[in-house]
Length: 286
Ligand code: SAM
Image 1: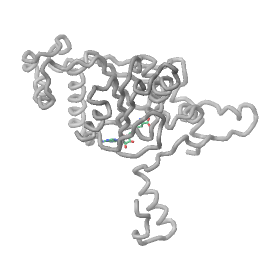
Image 2: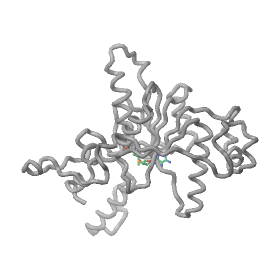
Image 3: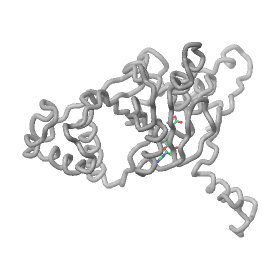
Image 4: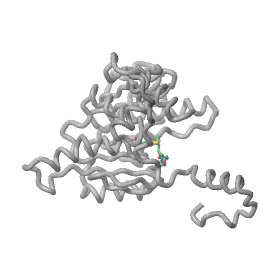
């Protein structure tokens, strides 16, 4: 698909470039905030799976930039934003970047150090769990994940932002009011999940009652968010200057990824198109 055609068929892709967002996903976080006010009172925030950085841009524009511009805000009062990804990303105002694996305990330690040992007020994550393709297994892992979330937060909601296509099953889980079970020790997590997974184990648990009412009974509300009369991500919209008779010029992406995982594949394809048979001639970083 050409850039102009994509601009027409994906209004959020076009708007992202016009408003200076690195990816259309910025609108998803903005629309989640419209519904849940997730940024309210936030001083320390972690952005997991952050590259190329449109969610970090939202955090910067919503939290860091207004504080920085306020004459009353001292430097040590500025919000702390830590963004983690396996890939490096171009710098963003007020965002500390950590290149690492979010599943690695050492990465968590680095974040905690940045927060001087304090807990984050908000954690956002735009990474999807890996799937095996074995549907029963994937469904089991996903339900364990939801069980785990329900154990630690009193309010859990599935949110579908308007900018997320209806044709996609993508949804975001919004977890509010962190309240782990009393005496929780993270080493016991698997034990706790096993108990919750079995109806007979529920009574043993000192956790909130009422959300498990028998085998397999967990209801999570599903909410559409963002201005529902706003742009529809599944619809094509006419391009502005074409309407007025001029020729439309598509904008370039705001900030292409600086070291995407597909870079090596592209370089190899380019090399083979130029007839370079010897892979040793590829750039050293490939
Ligand atoms: N929220 C981002 C934005 O608005 O620009 C887009 C995130 S993109 C959909 C998913 C990202 O997850 C990729 O950049 C990928 O490198 C990262 N990722 C996947 N697994 C990861 C892991 N284990 N640790 C850190 N990052 C990971």
